[in-house]
Image 1 (tube, helix red, strand yellow):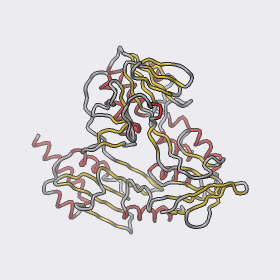
Image 2 (cartoon, helix red, strand yellow):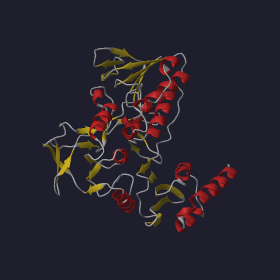
Image 3 (cartoon, rainbow, N blue to C red):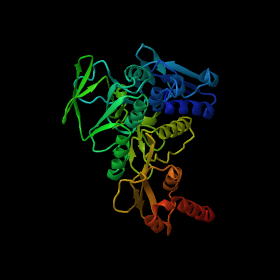
Image 4 (cartoon, rainbow, N blue to C red):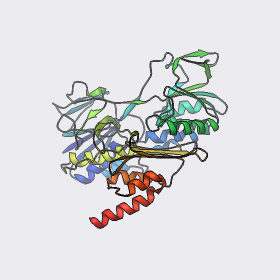
Length: 414
């Protein structure tokens, strides 16, 4: 059996290693699209801080790791997948046959419809080459404009501030990380970031970027232009699926997969940021976080090897440290009908719990690290809270006590 994995991020690498164990007699080919060993994009912003070198982003650091496992690693750009012929075409003309294939190609940064994005000094922060270009201009005291303050944008924000730049963040939404933060949490985070020296322009759009002297001018839909030595673009991503055109694979936002992570085409699977699959507690979505990618890679590989393992669904979750303030969100936290809230603005602490019946289905947390694992565990365990629900609504800080009590009752009942 010849297995081919397109994409060498966390999902692809995990899948390749899993296949070697699940089918020792199989032939595993891993295709990476960049001239580097497989690496984690989530680690890229930390290269800017100087805390790690480029090699620190590599997913496997042992020399010859893939060769030692018998994995054939190929560097190349996939331009077409033909399920009828069971072949993959690369940009250099090479054709790779397969019996089963996993698409784990991740995503590509979005480019908003703004004039001037092609100018020197305007960069995404998505590849190791991007980091090198950003580092060249992000010197101490330089003027930097960051477009976008989502999850990845806030990681970039912290990395830029550690380089000592004068930073202005322009965000179209009314708050930072709007997909993982409600209005109360967003207001707290905004106040925190501004106190650290970041200029925030929320509910604002960049309309154009132009050359101005030796630098750049950034025009906004409201307020005066901003001067910049560097503009970093971080306004979201789009799953990499263009090469599947004409393949018959069902693509919505991402590649639609079932609970075995198989696509609409038999023998073709998808994992990671490119996959649109089952969510924890129901629904189908793209959950672009590394833990989900790793789970996807393992489950997809096991099914490719004929093990028939169901995927239980990915839990929406994000944990982020923004200039020292830790924020976290889990599950379906956005509901307002059945919630408990604990807010302490003086100490920058916020906790919101969302319930459905006797279950905890979502949570937001700012300014605390002591209960993050507990929150995730209680949501994923789907254990009935019983009388602890009312206790939590009266005092959300009792989450650890609730977890111990409820899991103890569950284990005794089991």
